[in-house]
Length: 184
Image (cartoon, rainbow, N blue to C red):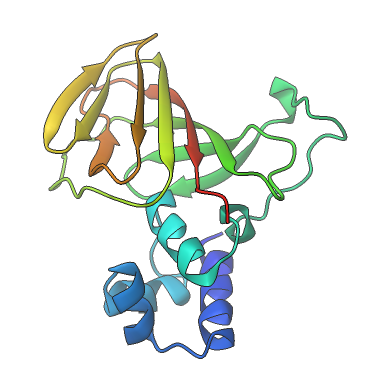
C-alpha cells in the first residue's frame, strides 16, 4: 500500500510540475521524507495525506485503494477490511462503503502497545476531528496538553489545533475517528 500511495503522490507532483522542494514548502514535510514516501520506503500518516490532498486539490480518499465494499450505505462488520498498516503499530480499518465525494473519513483504528514512545510530533491541518474511545486508554496531546481518554470518552476539535494521539499502555487501544476536510 505504501508504494501505491507513493506513486500517486509522485504522479500528482509531476502533473502539477512541482519539485520535491516545492512540495515540501507547501506541505511543511521534509524533502527527504517526501522522497522516501514517493519511493514507498516509509509510511504516511493521515495528517500528512491531508496536507498533500489540500496542495493537490484532491479528496483524501484519492490516496487509498478503497473498494466499494457494499452496494448500500451499510457496511457489515464481516465486510470491513484493513485500510492500512502503519509503522508505530496502527491498524486502520475501512468502515465506510464508499468515500468518493465525501467530506468525512471514518476509520476504526487499533493502536498496538508501544514499548517506547518516541518524541511526539504534533500535526496541524485543515478540517476537524472526532475521536471515540472504544477500548483501552488513548493518550491525546492537544496543544501540548495531555489527556488520557477511557472507553466512552470523546474528543472533538479543529484540526488546526496541534494534536497527536498514541497508546502508552500494554494493551490494545481501539478508537473510532472521523476526520473531515473543509469541502472545496
